[in-house]
Length: 61
Image (tube, rainbow, N blue to C red):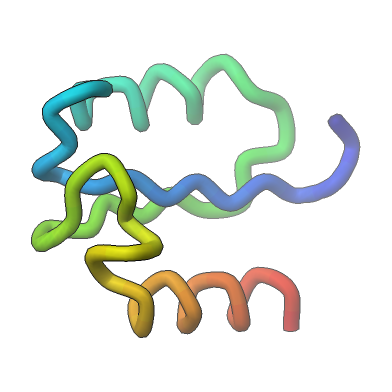
């Protein structure tokens, strides 16, 4: 990957632990930002759509 990467993860995800956010950030090249959403689970975009929209808007301009 050569484009900047934005990672978004739900802190209450019971399928993939929040600790994976840091692992992905270390493993992927070009990570521009990481976001751990406190009130979101596995489907952060459904649980916190406004927050994810703000993050995406900032990332994609």
